[in-house]
Image (cartoon, rainbow, N blue to C red; front, side, top):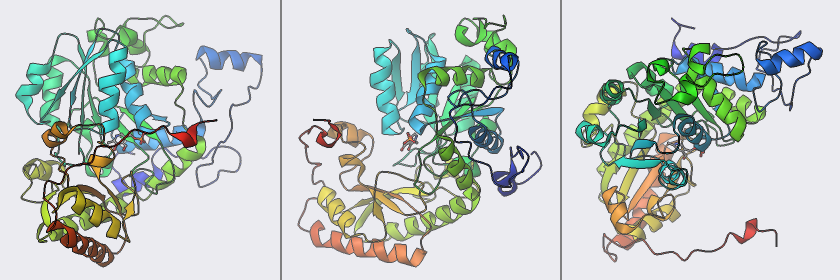
Length: 452
Ligand SMILES: Cc1ncc(COP(=O)(O)O)c(C=O)c1O
């Protein structure tokens, strides 16, 4: 749908009126499989000479509608919907690496991804190095090895809002012929489209802004279609050297979606398949993406400015503020808004953070972001609880730091809620040291999940 605006495409891109009734909304094809007309059609579907549907783990019309729309919005050649954001990252990396390979990643990424790369890839014989400062190009250059097969980063990492200079890193990865994967969850294609700036592959947690309403999980992988796999067959033999049953490699069969075609096979075999009901809800969420993200970003900027001037606040991490070290990069990339997620460090360390969190009434205490409702979380004792004090300090996650994801509530109500919570901080901040420590927690077995 080239030539049309983002809001038009978020409603119409990839739509097809299927079947005799031509329903206006995308139907939810809640079916494990699809009927073959006859013996020969069944064979053709398995042999790949007929691209109709066979089994939902391999493909489903509702999931495919979501894939076409997201690929269009991200300016990709195609997309693959999977069961969660974590599945999108894992499938992408598994499609690109083999034992003995190396991954180079920004360390400023979602903690679940960091743990996947650090702990789970190590068991497969894949080594990983992390770059502490995402825009330190010299550090990326030094980190690249002959066996580096993926460069990974997030466009807007949380909670520090250290916005990535996508084009600069893309120039470096192009020079080294390494696929550059960007997690674009927090930016969404409304604010930033990394493929247009030279990234090769984009991933999302669709559970966040794309679905938008905190009801379902989903993930998506978008192929830029430009990486020259055939020219680097030694590094990526699984895509460019190994022939399929038709005698063609993935790179030969679909040169502009070779990665996606291979990733679809990886997903089909490992099995992180999304429910078509979830695909429908993600599609429905996308229909209002630009409206939500614009309003959330505008509110976040207003709240960041207000928080920065509050006496109970030590600092605010938001790239829309001139005080942010990432403001200049953000102004180049985020011309529509700076996103909905910010971090605020309140006085009184953990005691201040606890008082703040417990006093909120409109904000929801929840580990999630990109919801229509405003959410609050204390990273040091939740998402980052496995990091020790030195690692937390190195990442700038102070004891009093809280992550806020701004929703669609009335701005006055959000200001009043934050004001009430900061009043509670004032009650404890005087009594506590600003560096009040993150408590050490005793591990407990998740008894509610055990059968006995
Ligand atoms: C940036 C980012 N990527 C990936 C994920 C994982 O997504 P999911 O929870 O859908 O598996 C998250 C989850 O918070 C995230 O914030």
